Amino acid sequence: MTKVTFDRHASEIITQADLLRTQVKDADLAVPVRTCPGWSLGNLLRHVGGAHRWAEAVVRTRASGPVPHDQVDDVAGDDAADAAALAGWVAEGAARLAATLRDAGPDAPVWTPAPGGTAEFWARRMLFETVLHRADAAVAVGGPYILAADVALIGVGEWMEFTVLPQVYESEEHLRALLGPGRTVHFHATDADAGSADAGEWFVDLTGDAITTRRTHEKAAVAVRGPASALLLSLYQRESALAEGPEIIGDRALFEQWRETVSHWLRK
Image: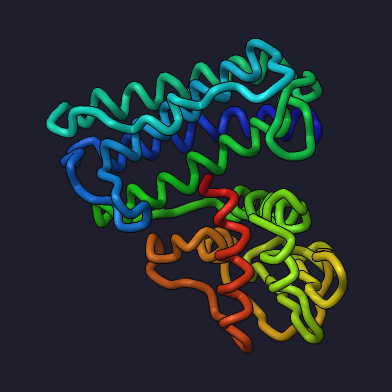
């Protein structure tokens, strides 16, 4: 990741948090969040603000090992409180995180729960923590959701990196259940820059002993096609935030099994 890209991610964390704040400014914090079963809107906002503060502490202290994440998991609070105040607290945490990331720089060594080991990982991961929970809020309050294609494409790319990691899967059995002859998935973002032949395209190969991905256009058992934002939200099972999801052609059950298996880890 170049420093320019890293700075863009840090800035986008603030932008997405501000959009989230606007989305919920007049909302009832007790409204249930359908895409996060069991959570209210207040729970969602406390989770996002806690996640930003947790990641900020990881980067600021240059943590060399796992850091307790109670502030991420403890989402209890007063849902009769003012939504604007809680949303402001979220925006404050996002700004603090962005500042700490910039102070550290992309190459600062720090603990990460997946390969990477630098602040670069946290800039991207916390960006999409915010992007996706903003979609949850949009569904909860019935508001519109728009995400720039270039941002969404980065999120799809992150998912493709995660899907090849053994630690993403609950067990070897869960991983092997995805593998088999003819089991392939093709993604095509229809609004990607057409400057190269593989722009906005990914091929996920589940036919071998391990999952692999490549940036190419190839015929697959199931094809998922649509705007980049629709691809990203469909991976995280949040396509209901959009007026229209992606087109899925072929073995839909394979796509749904694959995304559910990977997203289980990302939801932890």
